[in-house]
Structure formats: C-alpha cells, structure tokens
Length: 359
Image (cartoon, rainbow, N blue to C red):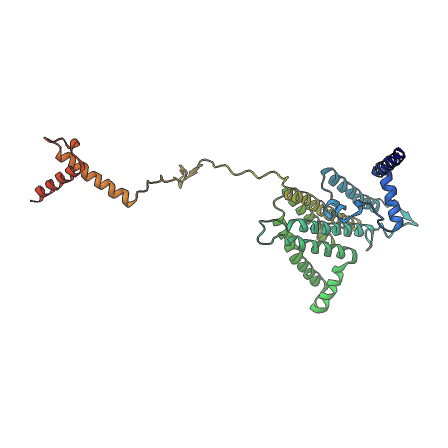
C-alpha cells in the first residue's frame, strides 16, 4: 500500500517535469502564446514592444553601399525622366503624356524633386535629434538643423504646389510694379531667407568636408535651375531649357539628400566615438622670414625664462647670520683654535672683538 502511494507521487512529479520541458520548447511557447491571445491576455510577441522597435535613425541609410545604391536609383529615375522627354518615345496620338511632359506643371519630375526635398527635411530632423545632445555646444548651434528642416520642407511644398507663383502674386498686389521687378524681389526674398540658412548650415557641416562639398554642389544645381527659369542662360530651344530646368532641380534634390545622409553617418559615428580623433598640430621650428630688402631673417622661438630659486626671509636671515659667524670665526682664527671652543665661548669671543673694533 505504501509502495502504491509512493509510485503515484513519483508519477505526478514525472508528469510535471515533462510538462515543464514541453513548455520550454519554441513550438510549445508559440502555442501557449496563441492560447493566451485567444483568451485575451497577450496577442503579440515581446519583439512587438516599443523598446524593441527600430528608431528613426535606423531608417536613414548609413552604410556606404546603401547610400551609393540609393543615389544610383535616384539618378536613374531622374535620367530616365529627362530621356523620355527628350526622345519622346512614349507618345499617344502625337502628344506627350502629361505626367511625363516636363514642360507641364505637376509632372513626375516635380513630384520626384518634391519627394527628395521632403526626405532631406526628414533627415535634417534626424540630425537635429542627435546633434542637440552634444555636450560642448554651449551656443546652441544645433538649432540650425531645425531651420534647415523647415527650409527643405518649404522648398518641397513650393516644388509641388508652386508657392513661388502665389508669393509673386502677393508681391504684385502690394508693390504695384511690373512683373519682372516683382519676380526679382521674390527671388531676393528667397535668397535672403534660404541663402542665410544655407550659409549657416555650411558652417555647421564644415567638420565633415565630404558632406559640405556635396551640399555646396546641390546649391549650385539649384542656382542653375533658377537661372534656367529666369532665362538667364544662353539662348537655346525651349526643350533644352526645360530639360536643364527640371534636370537641375532633380540633381539639386538628389545631392541634398546625399549630403544629409553622409552627414547623418558622420554625426552618428561621432556620437558613438567611432570617428578618428583629429591630429594635433606639431610644433615646428621657426621658418626663415624675408626682411625689407629681401634678406632672410630667422625668428627664434619664444624663450622660456629659467625659474629662479625662491628664497624666504628666514632663509636669507639665516644665511647672513652664518656669513657673519664665518667672518668672525675667520678673524678670530690665529693663535687660538676656534674649533675647540664651545658655542658660548665663541659668542663671548665675538662680543669682545666687536667691543675692540668699536672702542
């Protein structure tokens, strides 16, 4: 009877151990999670938590291969749109499709440029979110990225909705001048606002020379598109001017996005301490310098004065007293052996010598 009850207790322990082993397997865990989801306890795996989701920085391409692939795809789209407009290979009843006609507002080239500028604004906000945590930025220069993001978004809306024409009509209403002068005034306003942001951003990006160079190239491409819009380029056909206008706009947006992606990679690596430290300037010898009449004069480096030994008043007084004692001992030396006298006898002898000199 005792053996029967003990065997049943052992069987219960075995069954509980087998159940625990089955629950530890992935299949059992998934089945258990499915059962809990049906019961309303948990419907998603732990990987669906907010802490496990990728951040916004992870969506910006930072690997060199991914950046080059993205730029290659963007350049292929821009070149394809210009080539289709130039060759006119997609014609229906002898007319170009409105979406592919670069001379018509609201074409695919305008949409693509607006998309590139919007992506540049989003990446600028990503840089702002990382850059504002720099410890040695006491002047708050990271706020330039917030202004840059606003400027890029404004340009994106302007490209898609032609805000410049609305601004031009407002200038005509309030200025009451000729259209050409008002258009120049509109360009002046854009140049002052957006140009100021661009110059400030160049100073902010100067730590990464590659991104700064590409950003300057995007500005030059934008200036080229403005020159084509204002008919400031040499005379040519209408199709050529439209191709230069739209091509320069797409190139400007693509280069802007490339500069922002490269600078994001630089900022993230700088925040993680992966960028190489800047080498310190080595102290070089003084170079020869030409004088007034062409003679070479050499300028010696600054001399460092030797540190003088500091002496206190007590040390100087002790030295003087020792000097007096030595002098008195030397004068007292003669028929007497001063070294054999005691200290009190030497003092008495010095007093007698002083009285003899005074008397």
